[in-house]
Length: 406
Ligand code: MLT
Image (cartoon, rainbow, N blue to C red; front, side, top):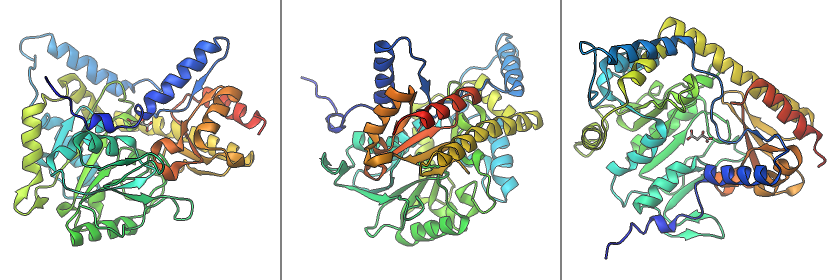
């Protein structure tokens, strides 16, 4: 009789955003007359920028002619895209990352869940609390997290680093030494960020204790303040301790197009084993690359026209973020985030739990957000709104929340 991977059976409930979507569907089915506004999952709503569409159309045409048709992509991604990434995201910021240290993929969600495969099962992971659920769940599926305690909603073998209002939603160095540290800045879900000097402390710490940092920088395009690092490789010594995950979803609207990349510097080693070599082996064996058409679309993100158009798109979403933040503050809510990130993190009023407030906002304002407790125990009593809606629906959602009786 075959057996299943029973680590999957340890997972409590369904994936957070699936639960939220199910609740929205159920509410809508029961109240077909209500116009529900979704500010829950961080999914973009603006159409692809013209420079990107032009590149995709041209690539589609190439695929229709024998002379320009492409089959399997190179394992690590096409050089035209990896060169554009190395030049624009790293060299332009003074970071020493070369094109052959970049692995193109179909998105940061897959990379952030797959990367744990190249590490031993007895590594101890440390995560921010609250945290993007994929980091923890993928380690649960692998069997790395120990036993789940449903009272505290924590795993016995995971180090949780609370991010609270008291520490400005930035984690402190853990007391117990981890092997793998997941950091995400600008942060999902709190919208908080980290200064370069604080990130340097993490890099120094990881190099000192022999840990690896998995740095998720999916939201770097939203950074507006000068002392916030755009990449961990701005820090001295990051080449020997950090892997960086990047996405085209939030800066270029590729949530449905799918494109991302992972950077693994060649100096990053466990003993004399290169993580770059392990990830290259995995990529070669398990993955056939993002489609040519999509990689050409990714290249267009770095064209002059693409940069200009995407700057406007990011500004559009950040205008929503400022609106949500300012209006909810005026209405008396305690609000953070929304300055260097497209997420607003607000405290549920009157001692409500996150799910109580979720249900209350859905029923009374017909707005869907994401309950903070779904991201971890320290997210309890918080609620996340995304700035990725249209301006009109964002204004309407905020007005409805402001007008709710609390
Ligand atoms: C979120 O809402 O947290 C994100 O959209 C999730 C993701 O990017 O996968």
